[in-house]
Amino acid sequence: MSKFVKAGSIVKRHDALEIQIDGRDQPLYISARDVARLLTEEKKVSVQKIIESKKTPGEVVILDAGEAWISRSGRAVNIWVAGEAPVMLSTPREQVLSVRAGTRASAVISMPQVEEIIDAGAKQQKKPAFRRIDEGLNNTF
Figure (cartoon, rainbow, N blue to C red):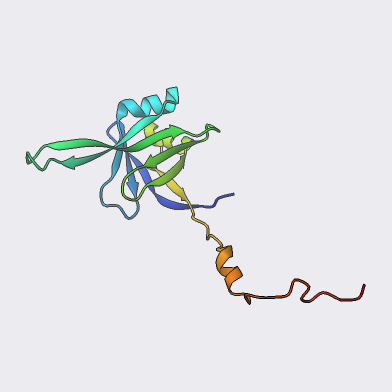
């Protein structure tokens, strides 16, 4: 079973949801229409990021940054953020519903903690290269 660590929060901005991920300067958004589709119809929706246009100052460009969907159990909202450092996030569905309704200020976002991978090959190489197959066995048959 995976352990989860806090990775940010979700807050309501107008009727949309703003996803604030710790360590990232720019928030991500789920549009108001997509929030309704996600929570009521349980459809997979897109997560966007908003950046200023380099060509035209003052204009903004909306780009896809990932996807959000309801978990198989129906108790969580999962968010996949693509890009240079892809990350999988999760938040309790009830918290998101409360944020959307305005009864809660924010919902906690968590991400699975990466567990240490044991390198069995490196452990094997630390042992002497040549050993007898019967080393350490009692030779009394």
